[in-house]
Length: 197
Figure 1 (cartoon, rainbow, N blue to C red):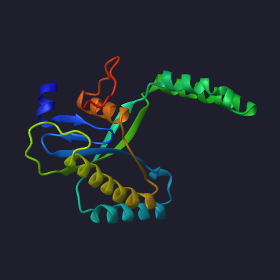
Figure 2: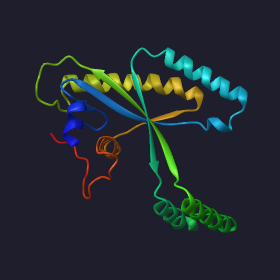
Figure 3: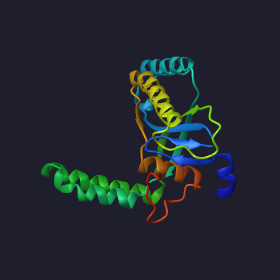
């Protein structure tokens, strides 16, 4: 499977905020934190749909949108909540216990899923070299600048809709690529991100 994926999506180098795919295509990944559309009024929903349509129609470059559904590891989340109990005001602590119990019961009946939204921006360079590029070379720097410019356009277009965009960098980018291209498997134990020069 890994060999087939590497033919379709041949990652040659991963930098601090972008990766080189193939010989001269660069990609950057951003996570979009959405608004809760279902809780909006009918007028707000229509305004969001019209704004999103205008945003998409105004783009002059391609944007790939990836929606990933991950099962929540409820035990880790509940452990984190319990560890923060001392930070909560004393009169709210009983409510935290009730909330933890509610989540535990809900998770025993059905799977809890978290949906995450990612935007993938790409830029194609014109390079004839056959070796992977390194940070600091002209084409790599040009790709970083162009992808950052595009991120700014996307972020400013989505901000009025209440959608925030944050870049995946270093470890987050490595984990995203591994989860997306590694069949959703967890990162191998001891695997870390490091820039190889």
